[in-house]
Length: 427
Ligand SMILES: Nc1ncnc2c1ncn2[C@@H]1O[C@H](COP(=O)(O)OP(=O)(O)OP(=O)(O)O)[C@@H](O)[C@H]1O
Ligand SMILES: [Mg+2]
Image 1 (cartoon, rainbow, N blue to C red):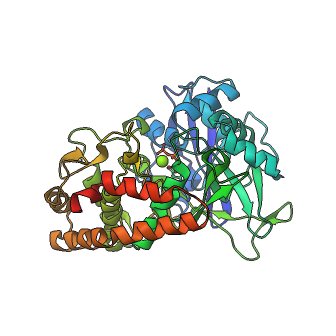
Image 2: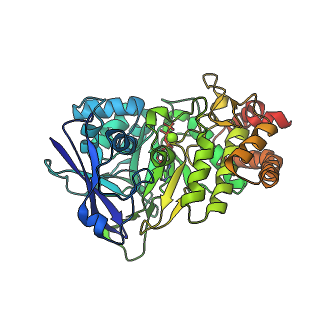
Image 3: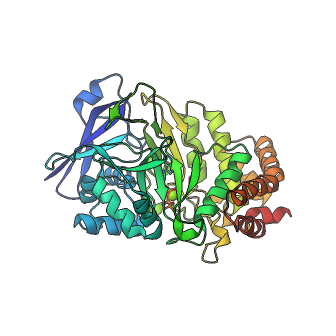
């Protein structure tokens, strides 16, 4: 019988939430502890798992907790490093869950927890991370017991801005940044992601701070993409570890977890209507439902204009307040123009008014979607109009900034976006 304790950080301190118990991943079920249920300050850790006494089903348990793990090649590498079966999500979670996305921590009481500390990375090690593939980052996350979702090679690191130094968090030490690898994925993907995020920012879309880490040169094989974690907050006079300030954790869950949809179904299939379900969640649970629905709308329109067809439901999240009592739409992240790559699908991960193909989506599709999502159509279409009118300038300004920073070729990416993103319908 396997037993994993689930804890959550609330206002800077960990609280026992519940347990996952089972003989394997095939029958494991999550239950909130009685003391957590009795505490009037407690809140559900997921919209898909409301506070209740009985154990959740095997599927609900899997959908939420497996949703904390890396996917694809990275998951395979991590399973190998841990000597575990790639399909056994519980075993991988037991090995990795000490620092996850959001504020949850998973503890396997039968194992010793590594003492928390930060290990300084030399510039050689950062360069190696850029130059080597996802196997290297998977080794790092396994050693540091850290779980990040998504398919690309990435690590959670601590960054000391003043010293410009990177550290690997070990044990339960929190990371401050997510650092993604580059050339092993798609050509100039780091510049592509940074350009998309700068363009989004120029259009008034909320994004986390991000930057490109240059190691030896500005070439794709020597750069990494760093994004500051919006689910980690530094506080003055906060806790310290090794003399370094450490952030507190804010909880987050992605829409796949919130909707109770398995990560394997993160791309919508016919009739899934994921978008209107997401708008429904914001209407019912957001502390600022109107503002968040408009933000989600703008992100959807932006993904279409920039040609990001990888806009699946794990690429949009909900961010909880420090006491878990408020829920807001998280800033936009993982926005890449996939359409600039020949291998990209033309089908968006979420249908717009019933249409998937970026080539077929029209203003009418958006108007249909707005009606279905319960938004005022006139207002939604006015926002679309404003975004598309300001798009070209926002894109060119972003490209200019990156070219000035020495990332030659960013203007070419911008040109490609103009010819293959949804924006091309308007020029
Ligand atoms: N700045 C951030 N702060 C906090 N969490 C973040 C941030 N950026 C990304 N995340 C979380 O980390 C996860 C992985 O990041 P991201 O989506 O960028 O990786 P990816 O491997 O490119 O994903 P995919 O598999 O969709 O290609 C996201 O799903 C999101 O929950
Ligand atoms: Mg992603």
